[in-house]
Image (cartoon, rainbow, N blue to C red; front, side, top):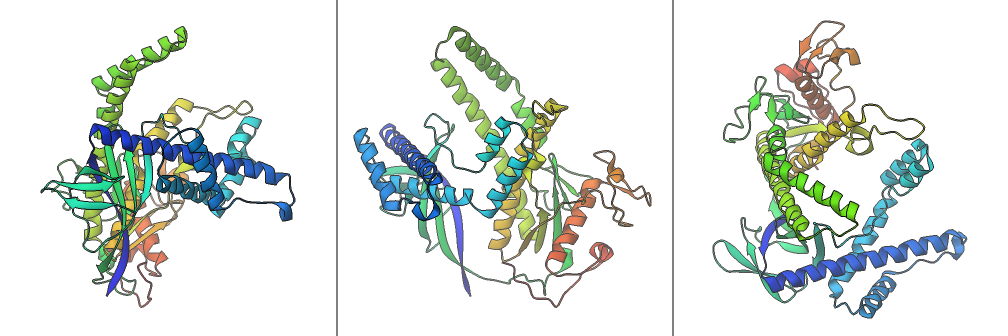
Length: 469
């Protein structure tokens, strides 16, 4: 039995100088086309506001494409129709997302909470697409599967043909046999150029894990924290092969590398370069002059160092998620709401100024740098690829609920690293306890009605049939 799988594969490109110029130009064209379409959509919205519903008119895709072509020709900008059409398609997707139920609800909630005119204006724009800038470090454009080929060159490199150019592609892993290419995203950042392939291929289904054949001993709950991932089962033996993972606390806590990355961000070279940039920016502001080439070169060096830190995190997360996915049939994580909840600013406004703003700002940066969603997304697609179960559960009170007596109270966790139940006196690590509760809720979501006592001591099987997908 076969099933269709959609995956993304990212490769490093090594274009020549002329090829870099061609790719950079297409990125510029993509931004221009996107901005023209966004401007047209905004004007259309303003015009329709003044009209009755029956009189409102909306542009068709062909009309958008025609306006973009005319505008680019008037500016004497050469362009590829594929790039301009993909820019329009992506804008339409962004507009559709802006009016989805989740985003509309989030926007209305933000407007209701806003107290000043400035906050209300900002809340009203929440979720809507924004104009693209060609001055940003990160640039990209999207290409469909037309006139795209990948040909062999040698053991390490392939030739990626796009825009009538043969660009060297570092082939660190082979694409699946019999894949179908949906689209390609060409991007660049501080470290170089990349090609991301969106492909579809057929995969043979092995033993599918369902709720009626899952073994509770192979289920896992993961509590994600800024400096470690707590697991409901001891996993220290699994990570012996990874040198940069240090398991502590009886093997339940897996180091996510945050401390190591922080030391790299706070290194002498990074701090020196940041001070240089700060002095140059201040001088340019006081003298009302433009920033020079030295500022640009230093910023490129800083961006490159930051990219290396990010790559270290991504590599480590892939290793951890792969080992967990290969070892467990069911994985449950918290459904964390980072944006506008966990990482909400404490600054406040003119009416109600915030408290301990700097401390909250530092905490927000630490949480965002831990990239909880990135790690959970890796677990999700790898579990799906392995025909196993994955679920996100409600995180409410997972760290405040006692494993022994079930008492729920914030006073149970007065310290960040210590849990002591005020009802029965039970003491444990709060993160490990939260991981056990997450696993328990994950099993419940698949109809497996077991208790926390069963969860600790024995396997459980259910007659309920729930698909892994």
